[in-house]
Length: 141
Ligand SMILES: Cc1cc2nc3c(=O)[nH]c(=O)nc-3n(C[C@H](O)[C@H](O)[C@H](O)COP(=O)(O)O)c2cc1C
Image (cartoon, rainbow, N blue to C red; front, side):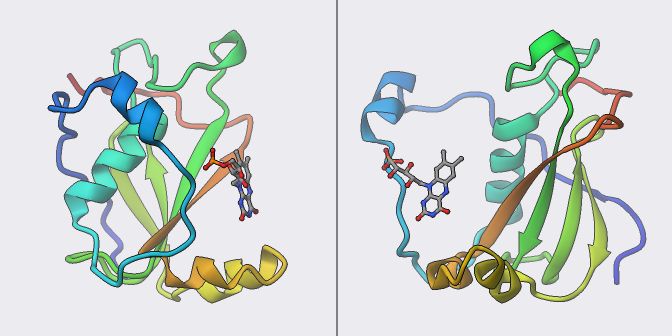
């Protein structure tokens, strides 16, 4: 198992797709390609969900009272260059900390009352809340 924190590649901050188009076309899907995700894909998703964007600790997602209690856990199943297992996303450092090396997708599908489609996803991002969420941010610009 990887003991050292894994630095994620810097997120892409420009795109050719407008925010309005993204909103207009977004849909929840429950059928997935069997293609692996890249580390860049994972980095972009984690950053979009909870990435730190200012030295003071402000993030991509707002937070009541700027307490930022949300933490992300990554269940990696099919990512090129990243071993299967459970990771915690350190938003303040844009790093992954490996916590386990078991593929937990089937366990999560069972915990979600048998939603079998979850097993077919390349990754699952688990959102947890806690009072001690990462507080020493390093901004990614
Ligand atoms: C907090 C949250 C939890 C959800 N949980 C589930 C779930 O457990 N199973 C599921 O099939 N869809 C789940 N969904 C997806 C919703 O069913 C979906 O967003 C809704 O049907 C609207 O469709 P749309 O996302 O394509 O607009 C969840 C959505 C949110 C926001």
